[in-house]
Length: 550
Figure 1 (tube, rainbow, N blue to C red):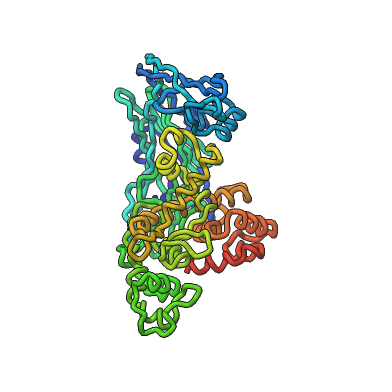
Figure 2 (figure 1 turned 90 degrees about the vertical axis):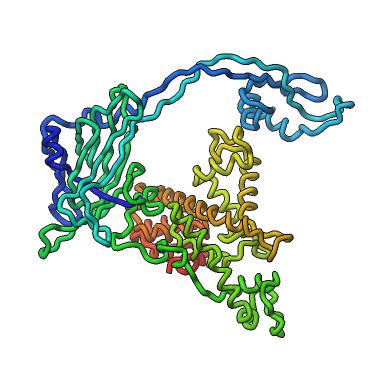
């Protein structure tokens, strides 16, 4: 999402007989709040929250299973489950306990039923089922509040040129015959109340870090919406040659319905620079804007080895023993290398347009990691366009829960993954997921043209975008754990992306140690200071980051 800011509209609040807080510029980077109404302080600083459910009757089939020992047919565990098929690993662990679960996993094996008494371990058998009527409590949809910007006529650079842009909170009640009675909240440390389903704020300058807004809505249903948050930054020009000062408005909130926020800005609570992002963090207007023409020796070597390049004129065969192209081989492969490095541009562009990661960043990452060859480096465990490792797969599954929710059922099944996060899976199932994720980005295929499964290579573009998002989440948490505050309050938006690349390449340990060292030396948390604080074993990652972020 993009970003915007705040202070209340007199016309609106005159009609409602309510006023909110006036933000006035009193000094650089300072905001003052003045209560413009009497005895209208929000009744509660913490709302009760949603409390809406209904009950329906459903038919449920309960299956009874016994975990029985092969040697004597003694029943060791009785399980009642409500789905087809055997009890899942998690159910066995929860119902039968860890000791019996471990014995079942380690000792049980397929068996010759004619001599079952010689079999080891345990087996499951279903012994009955029963269908019952059950009252099922179903949650109803919560009231919500959306954040938008009105009366903002933007120029070509995104600045509001109109005199009175307004930030608007609009509450929405999804239940029929119910309505919103009022909106309450906090602006900084001051409370506000608005009757009805709408609040308007006139906008004036805030500090560079913005101002925090917390808000919730009351419903005739008798509950409130969740408490939502927004961080609003407003930058105002001070141009004596203008009658109307321009304002640049940013809003960081899950409830924002304006232009999309910059990638990871909400997770970091970090505002991008108002002058715009550098090229390496941008997405061009069309896929053609990503085109490159770099002489990649590793890519050329692979294309030569796969027979895509005619190197009959090269007395050295066109390839060095390490797999890279010789000067002759590189010259022969020029056109093929140029075409290949741009074959993923449309996919990268489409991923970026979905709001995942900046297109140029992803292209630069592939360039540095694999030179766009989506296979496996010889004698290394790095796989695919973005050279994913098992540790990297672990980060993706742990720190991108939305991706985990999509990917886990494809491997372990919906029942095993239902309501269970990656960290709560058994070690064996975690390993299965990591292995499956690594294989999903490994396009090496002995029977395919050029030795590459191009469909799998194309699919992997989105996987690596989701992996970068996981790393941005982990990076924000590492910085927050060290500093004790949201990452964006300590590190600029651009430098947080550099730290994310450091995390992707060298891991969270290198990142955390460097951030801690910089802070211990009372250094500002800039990329340069963090890079200078890297331990010797982590320092090569600094060149990696510099190469991608240029």
